[in-house]
Length: 323
Image (cartoon, rainbow, N blue to C red):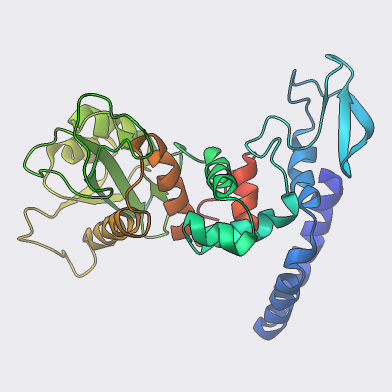
C-alpha cells in the first residue's frame, strides 16, 4: 500500500475508533492480534520504505520495479543503475528465513536467552546470535528521547568485559562472567547514565568517563526546560538543572528518599537493578562492545514493544520508543 493511501486509511480508522465504545475497541484490538502472524514481513516494512521513496545507494527518488527475487520485489535506480529491495542498507539486509522473524521477535519480547530462542525458532545458535544483534543494531546508541515532567537520573557501573574473546587484551585476568569487581575503584568499570521520566521515556548513554562534563554532554539536550529533575547529590546535576531552568530535587546520601510524597529516584534505581540482574544473571554477563545493544533491548522491553514493533524498530527507519 502506498504511503498516501496508507495515511488516508489510517485517518478513517482513527475517526471510526473515536466513536466506538471501550468494548467495541477491545473487539477491534483482539481482531488485529488474531491477524498478527498473517501479515508478511515485506508488507510490514513496505509502508516505511514507501514513505522514504529513495534509492538506498544514491538517495535518488527516481527508480522503478525490477522483477522479484525469492518473492521479494526488487527495484532499479534510474540514476545509479543499482538494484535493491526494501531491506537494502538496513540492519535486516541479507538475512534469511524472514518467515520466522516474527517468532524470533517474540522471543526477544520475552527476553529469552540465545539457546532458548534458537530452540523455539528451530535455528542454529550462531544464527540466533546474529539475529539478536542485527535486530538491535538500528537502535543501539540512540538516545534522542526527550524527557519532561518529573525526570529521574542516576549513574551505574558494570565491569568491563571481553566475553567471547579467546585472548584478553590490556593484560587483564579472566573472571567469572557477569561477576563484579572491586567497587572501591572505578578502574575496569564502564559507566552508564540512566534517566527516565514518569511517561517511561528513557535514555541510557554509555559514558566515556564518569565526569561532570560527560554527564552534561549526554543529558542536557534530552531534558525539556521547566521540568523537575530528581537526582542524587552529584554536582553535575545541579549545573544541568540550573541551565535548563528545572526545579531540582536532590536526594542526598540516602538520608532523604522521597520529597513531597512524589519526588524520588526509586524508579530509575529500580530500572538499574533490573538491568544489572538481567545482564549478570540470565545473560551471564555481556561483552562491553555489545553493551549499547543490550541497553537498546532493555529500552524496548521497558517500553513493552510487541513483536511487530520490535521488527519495525529493527528495520531502522523510524523510532518506536515511547509510543
